[in-house]
Length: 342
Ligand code: FA5
Image (tube, rainbow, N blue to C red):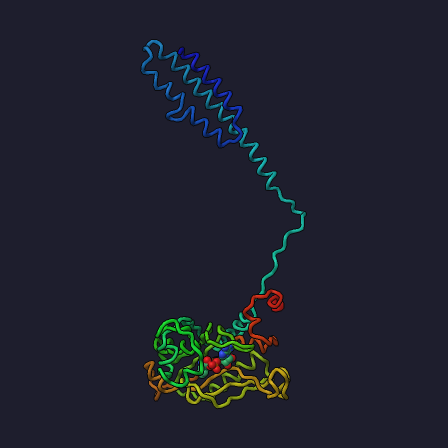
């Protein structure tokens, strides 16, 4: 076929194709079909080799003109389509700033989080450091090192979830005491908050709950130091008029051991429903760290003494906010939770 005729045919083909193109992207793709390396115009150019030398200059001119025309034709089309596309995008994304916005509901901190933060804040103010131990513990840290070897009757005080023979869900944050004392020499002043697990389930007991452990080890500490610190802590969290009382108790890892009570902040100690008529509310367990526990961690019990205290965080949240069933703290019911918006 005559080259001029071929060029004309390509031009017509381009004009027909261009009419069908609706997007700048297609325009770009089709342009490459004509002008790309294996495009139609490029293959015509390659055929120049077979043209007699005297016709080459003229033919070269014609083909260059075709290439330039094609390029311009597509560029014009593409830029026209881009303008239309941009205008459409602007129209689609147009925002009426005078429309009322969609307000996302505000979240609120969970009461357990609020109380945990408040407790931590108080102790940090007294110079404590935070230590977080693992929730999956081995038998040694949760029991044996806490002077509760296998077959010790005190193991029955807590119903344990075992994962394997030596692996369990920790029943108390006291396991953190050992992990700290093994790695740090006195003076020690740590606070260890976290989740603990026991096979317990009623209105005031949950299988998963949170504890806060406090441990101080130094030279010359006595039960009076423990009482002084608890007094200060209780006044900060419940108010200056609230009193503290220590009652004899038993924990294998403390000697002597005490139960810490506070005077009922609802009735001031006269007796009411909250304190079940006793005038006192139980906060948690405490005591002087047992000599055997200190020695087992490589701390000389003749040189150092220590005291520890462990409380249930949900229990404090229940007292503080008047919550009568611990389950409410785990159900995630927003009607309950939004009442704690700070
Ligand atoms: C202990 O767990 C000791 N490790 C505390 C301790 C620490 C003693 C340091 C001495 C020195 P106890 O089992 O009493 O003690 O638990 C402490 C607190 O956890 C309780 O006073 C109670 O507030 C809370 N608690 C216990 N079981 C549950 C439960 N199932 N659900 C919610 N709170 C619980």
